[in-house]
Image 1 (cartoon, helix red, strand yellow):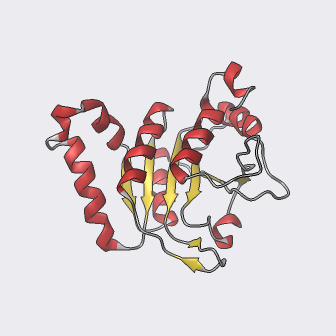
Image 2 (cartoon, rainbow, N blue to C red):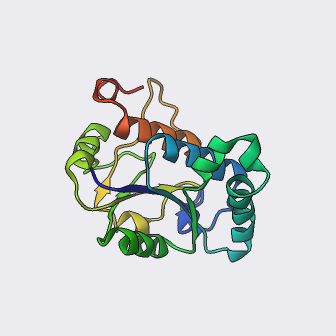
Amino acid sequence: MSAVYCALVHHPVVDRQGQEVTTSVTNLDVHDIARSARTFGLRGYFVVSPIEAQHPVVQRIVDHWCSGAGTHRFPERGEAIALVRLCLSIDDAIAQIEAEEGKTPRLVVTSAKAGPDRSSHAEEAEHLRIETRPTLLLFGTGHGLSDRVLQRADVFLEPIKGPSEFNHLSVRAAVAITLDRLFAPKSRANNPI
């Protein structure tokens, strides 16, 4: 199986009108996605934000749970938060993965929008079992990843769909569901939520 990483991208993403914007990092996203990444065995979780002023906030969260007072209260939280890595851009995340793995990662993008040439979660799960290159799963904030990110994708995952027409999950929920569909035991992966 390939080494899998995920990234929560705060730039470049789009707003409601489709304009490219930068979103703010939230405490919940740092905690919850790190916990999902750890649960499903990912090698790292990148928080991608070009706003350097937000990096110390994220670093304080990491420090609290990995070397501060939080290590005594909930040691398992530190185990998850230790996966968090800060970077200024997707290219920085790619460079870090290349340095660690010795190979350029495949870019797998996600979107709530349907479209052509989407890979199913089952197809990508099977591919991950045999892939030798590392994989970077990209999740967008705001109203999704910008077109210039989507155009770089090696794989475009199908949207998550439930039984209703409503399709506006929080990014934390979308990450958890995606990871479950990609890494759950085969018996569950064939019967997605």
